[in-house]
Image 1 (tube, rainbow, N blue to C red):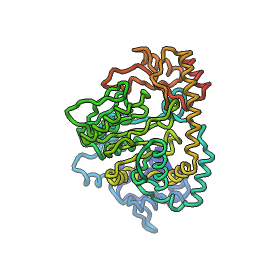
Image 2: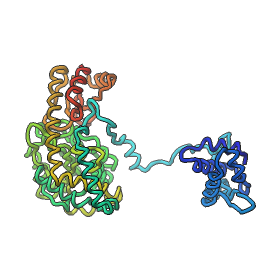
Image 3: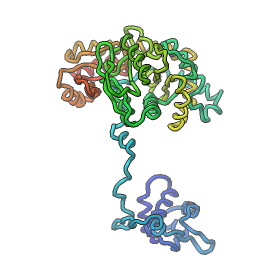
Image 4: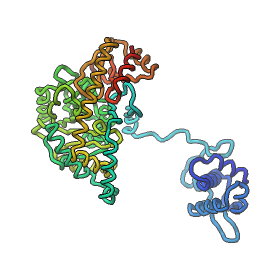
Length: 484
């Protein structure tokens, strides 16, 4: 094997230190037949001189490749190639040998193996993407600058001093008991949820909750009812599972029950603050859905994604608290109330579903971060969570008001649909103008997430979903002026 060839291979190797790159170059030489079975390699001294490396580096690379079976080394005789990769490859396959390029290297494969049907459906949905930073008017982002980082750091340091050993090990797949207790108390006091800690399952995100429910409760071809317009992440999870999604149009009381020949297996709702319109579902309609679920055996998924942030009145009690039959699966998240990278969410499950869902959850990722769970439990138990929510409600309300005023003054053609709460506001545009106005906003560096794209069967409303929670009032004003 010529040193010049090995030098070329070494230059092509990427990643790692000099030893790793030399190992990669030598492997490539053996794989491509540049170094053949039984060939004697240069001594470590000669190769180190030719390649400009230390002898220690070359010695370490030879030793590594001997361990991997590429080389035989004999004291006083030298190092020899121990395998013919071409013959070994032919023995594993009855097909033709892999094609080579003119340089003698392996040519790339013509195509990757096909995905499974479920895998292809997942890819076809386009996935779920989140913004990498908060700016006008990215939807759904909290203000991270207002989060008490120093307090969180103190709680984390205290926990690691006291419980580092247990917290650094594997955790309970259902979630840290202290956090489940804190979540159950909070939901009972603030949302009227009827549960105990044993019904709480801690997860990394509400999207993981939806994927888990789709995987465990849906079979291919099952029917799922969804609000129209509705949350795209839920639709993605259900479609990827092979379910048939039936759209429920909205009226003044919320989502409407739809007569279908096939009873739904799941019904997905955002009753306290409908996504994306902001409407609240009436009590009569809530009871109708509970009765329907009991009569048909359907499960109701209540996604309570931002009920902490309602500004002009108290949020209506959770649908789960009205359910006497155990048909409601309640989802909540800390991504908006704390910060997105905390990666903590939760489900409140009817007791018969707890063990199956916990078992299924272990297949996904085992458990969330133990230290994060412990600090979140302390944050809630010591009253910091309630205080933080009170502060954020005041801050976000002032920014909601600033956006309303700016729209009224500068963009009278952008009419808010509902502004009672949340971290974003849906606004209606002049029919047929959304695409053009969005392009013009993008040219000015302003994000205006589409409203019409969330409609499917119902006639779409041209509009935007303008996030305001993470944007200071002066930035809101200047961004709306730019839109004008």
